[in-house]
Structure formats: C-alpha cells, structure tokens
Length: 350
Image 1 (cartoon, helix red, strand yellow):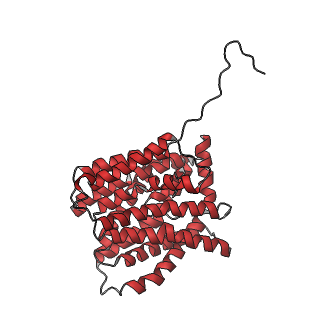
Image 2: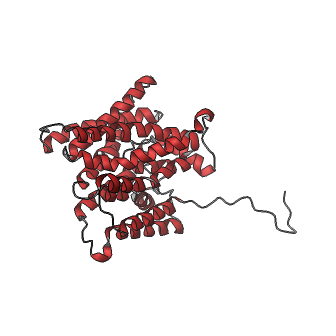
Image 3: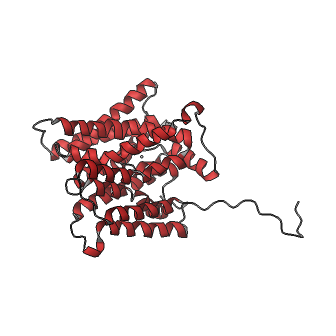
C-alpha cells in the first residue's frame, strides 16, 4: 500500500492501492534511498525471473478489489464488508508471521501510532470506498483511487519540508485534477454522476497520503519488520471496525455465498496476499519498477466492471483516467541527477 506515499516516495505509491497495509517508515526510507541514489535492492536470482507473473498477479488482485467491494455490498452493509476485509487480511499476515516466527511490536508508543495509521490507511478509506460503491460504479471508484499520488504531492508540499515541488510535479498536479474533471463530465454539470459517492471515493484516496505522512513522521525509527508492523496495523483496524460496525449496522439476516466469497477474496487476496506479493516485488526488482503496478489498477478495475458487472462506460471515463494517470506519473517524476561536469577547455583541475 504507501508508499502510501507526497509526492509519495516510490515505495509509498504502492499504498495507493486499494488494499495495502502501511509500510514501516524504515522500509520506506530504505526503498526511497535506493531510488534516489539509483541503487537497486538485492535481487533473488532464482525468483527474479518470475517477477512479471507476480507483477501481473498483483495488478489483477488490486484491480479486481473494486469489483469485490461492489459484489460484497450486494449482500452486506459497507462496514461489514470492510470489517471482513481487514479481518481476513489480518489472518493471512498473522499466519505468515507465525511461519516466520516473528513477533508483534511490544512498545505502547508503536501501537499508539499504528492505531492512527490503521484508521487512515485501512479502516477509513476502505469504509469510504465501500459506501461510495453503493451509488457509483466500481470503474469510477478505481479511477478515483488513482488520484492518491496527486493528493500526496499536494500534501507533502505542506507537511514535508524536504519535499520541494518542481515545475513538472506541479504541472502533474494540474493535469491530474483536469483528468478528474474529465472523468466526472464537468462540462455537463456533472450530470449522471453521484457527487456524494464520488466525493467519498476521492476522500478515500486522500486518506492514504495523510496516513503515510503520519507514518513517516512518527515511526521513522522503528526497527520492526514490515510484516510485524502491518500485521499489527490490520489487527488494530479490525478492532476499530469491530467496535464501530455493530453501532451502525444490524447483523446480517443471511450470508449469501457470492458476496461472502467476494469479501473473503477482498481481504485474503487483496489485503493480505497482495501485501506479501508487493514486498517480494520491491525486493526483487526495486521500488521504482514495483510501484508501476499503481498505474494498472484503474485499467483493470474498469475492464472488470464493464465485462463482469456490465457497468456503462462513456468516452470521458477512459480518457479522463488516462489524463489522471499522466498527471500522477508527473508528480512522481524526479529530475535526473546531473553527472560530473567536464572541465572547460583551458581549465585546470587538481
């Protein structure tokens, strides 16, 4: 997930995905440093050959997450969908934690900060997407998710003093939000678009950079593994939703098979298994290439919504999505480091 990431850092962008748990600040810092210096994390030579398959699997899982949300809300209340999502995701990570014989953090301070991270990176955005898809297509929700890097860049300018905007990144911000207006059909007065549902989806995408800015500021010195931190975070998100959900929903009268399977897939695959895939890719091919999965998510979400849910697609939706992705790519771009200058003719060097 962000990578969940101000212009978010390379690792941070991965949290722009619909289901990524928080990346520990130490891991994000390491990945960002590797990107900034042009270095590449060590690759597992035996496994690296198959990274395109894992990359494709991650893109599919995250892209289909919006379809799973839509199907899940056909049988359960939005908060119940979100509760099942984080609970199944937590079970996957806890199982892996047990296999690797790692422990959860013991510091109360770490748990307190992860409680805030769980709210902004899991409980709140996941709930907003579920409520949004009651009134908007899953295709539109997937495209709104792609605006997270745009929000991240705008916020990082204010909250992270070391992240200064370049002209290219500011231009990317403008291009991206022009794409949002195109998707929504602004020239038609937003006719045919549910503004409340759209605002919820855009608000969900805004949550990711807010959560990541908080993580970067408060957990930068953590020595715990990303698996330990993210397992704790999903446990806390599950606890938060377990308290809130009974207050605003009634117990399901039944458990229809298809929506139940959708919630299970959303949590176990899109939140748990996808997290493990993501970090495997970062280790094998580096954060810069791994983060490109972000740009496939709206494409797959749109294709899945149209093909499987028969959602309507007008010309401005794919065109606007392409503009959004172009703007997001610009906000993530960094100027190439200039090489050592050559001595001028007639000059001398030591």
